[in-house]
Length: 205
Ligand code: ZN
Image (cartoon, rainbow, N blue to C red):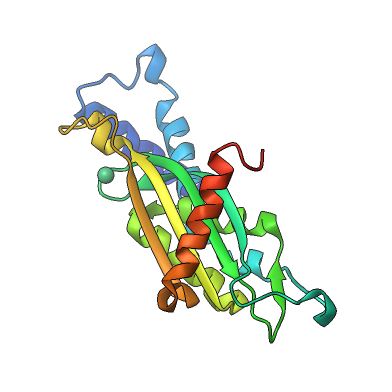
């Protein structure tokens, strides 16, 4: 079913939701809301019909001579912004992803830097829990680039925590996923964290 067909089916259902909330769907402000709401929902979930591996197919191979990397030299992409949708409450959570991978010296394969944020975007545009999204990003990079190791750290605020009962406005949720060398060598994570601190201090920029 294509997007416009799905939107056509969503509209009457969302109109009904408005009615059940005690609203008048015909009043001025709500008249076109089912259409806009449906369109927004399809955008929030468009990662369901996207394949993250498509982006990670764009790879480059470093020449052997350009690859004197030690087994703890990592490529770090930090502060990748995302907005996702909590699958329990259909409310947004937003934050940043920091990730790193250590290229495999055998294949010498790396990916385009923008592709890493595309992968985050594909997983974020689904109904999600942060814990799973964190693992999915790490797994996708692990499976497509076969690096020595990969780590993802996600920090987010959840509007279901802010707007509903508990009203925790200052609380953020941090989740991590590690694969390969990041599991077996704790020093690597310290190094990764050091680089992130350098970035958020007055180090690089
Ligand atoms: Zn929630």
